[in-house]
Image (cartoon, rainbow, N blue to C red):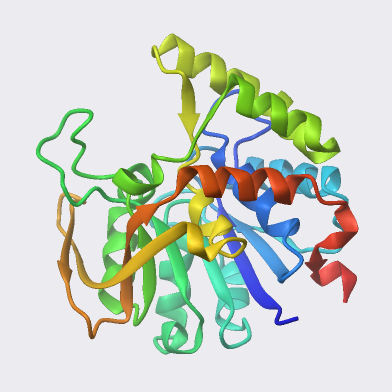
Length: 288
């Protein structure tokens, strides 16, 4: 079995009183994937403080039955830095995949520390942007939270990275959880029950906004490691403007890829399948 090494950079807020909960589902999908070795997790400000995200991730890993995975506190603000996180990212083995689930501050710091970092690393998955944006108000937002919380960092990454996968909002919003979906996940395992309890506040929020469920924005790139046939990415040239708008142009020779299609039903099934696995099915740093 070919094992994929993964590092996660996150602003996980499941366990907090506010903030999006999707990062936790992405982390859970990774640690339940038998083909993944989770090398570690770094945290960043965003939906949570970097320090708060450390607590949330550590609790999540405990609930998942995963021990020994390092969780490092990263940048606390836009333009901030954490030398330990930047160095750990630079020292990752070649071909490690990085899931960037929060603002890109930590990754920009790694790029500053070693300009060749993005040439050695495996694919970097980023969620953000809406190429078809038409204005500054919902639902036509020209930008996305993860990119604009530290726009200078995001622009640096987009300029210097050699290869990356951009999962745009108009595609990833197709993966949503409603009450019945969340109940099935809650019944699947102890980890599912923890995600269910921590997500009930977010489901209530979606109802207040007159929505039937909430989007799992950051989960599709994590599930792509589980069920790659459920999504399609295509080579493209990507530009991030001064306002945080993403511009995409088809380019078959590009090493960047942009999401084109998502089979939400297949991804949801993959998520439920992953969360139903026993804890020891996952290959992590702790099991080596």
